[in-house]
Length: 150
Image (cartoon, rainbow, N blue to C red):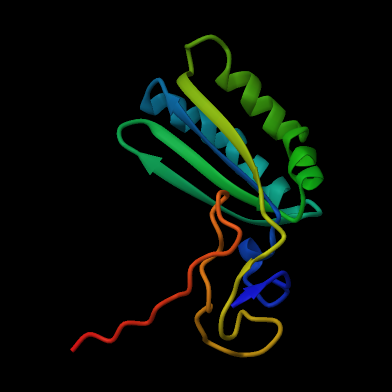
């Protein structure tokens, strides 16, 4: 069901700003060294106003990434200014002695989206939408056709 009320969604569903980033570290020793400051940074992040949720991911061989969700862009940017985040970014970007590559992307959620069942604020309903969301070149999306296979 289409909605703009995500008050019953899990924390990441209530967020309107998202950070995704990853760093390819130079060696396993770099990752061990990182952990000393990283745990402090996460501790502070979780206590910050506007923090919703985060997840860390791993890509072989030496890439660690993070997805973090905040209530709004200002909360995300306040986190970026925090002391341990700044300390880690200075360490990561110290030439290539600690890391070989990295990226950060910031995303903003559209005000409208979809929710169903217990995560739906308007009613506890599990239901499909009648029409697909229109593409940029469409005025209206096509109807959702429910086909029954025999």
